[in-house]
Image (cartoon, rainbow, N blue to C red; front, side):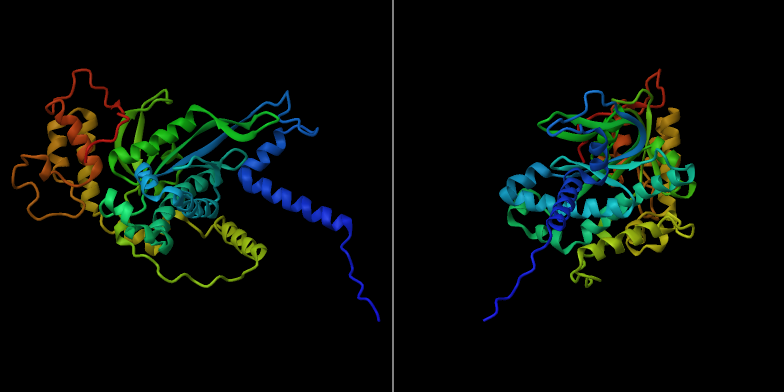
Length: 399
């Protein structure tokens, strides 16, 4: 009788695998960017926490916030399934952000903080990263509305009881500015963090998107970093003072109609089942976006999803809104009112013929209605000291 000799793996091999696994868990817990930050600021001795003399690093970043709409009602309906729901959404949000060279920074339950680090890159790359941050938001909107996993919630009885015609929707805010990057905590808990009023501005812009009834709200600083071609796809919708910013901010949006997209019932077969191989392919796809022949603004016409979501908005609509907005900011509110009355997404042959006597006759466009409602509160007469901007109300406007 011969006994089979089983070859045990060497202790160094086991140790190496354990270290790799711990490193992977660290990167997963803090995120790719967060793990790097914590690694720089953590102490060297066991249980040391943050180094006592650790200083932050001043960086320029594009800060994005993506938040689920109607989250309180959704939690009330889903109960313990809320965790599954949020994780299904985060898979799309984090995946699209990573695809477009961003980094998930924080998960806040109903919201996600996303970061595109600009410091240390050339001006050309900063412009492309700004374009990518806007494109990431647009692709998240598309993927959420095409997802067969999230489409299941459209038929959830509890959700439909609380919200008629429910579908998963998100709002986005984007601002570019400075922040102090570093690790905050003690020997008990460490978090990677970005400290700056610019971060709070991005968060408030996300709330602005709900106020104006649009998918995303972008600051003028964020748009100024983008390429001229992508900036042309953005619509100027207001000029407001936002807490956290010393100067008034001009707000922009990218108009997207997600109702034009259909749920993809059949997912493509995975290229590989090996997670390492999938990661390699993902990195190759990401790096291809840096090629000179990849021009991000072209996707607004070449990408089927984006083209479909933009189809609803006519050139005439953008022209009319632009004329109305210029009159609004200049204090010519009667002229602005008459032009906003005609801001329908698709041109109407009889527009402007009949007098508009009630809000029910106003266009469905969110920013047009918000500005009309604001001017109406002053009887369409601007204050004598009208500076061309107003304070942004925090509460969502009635629709």
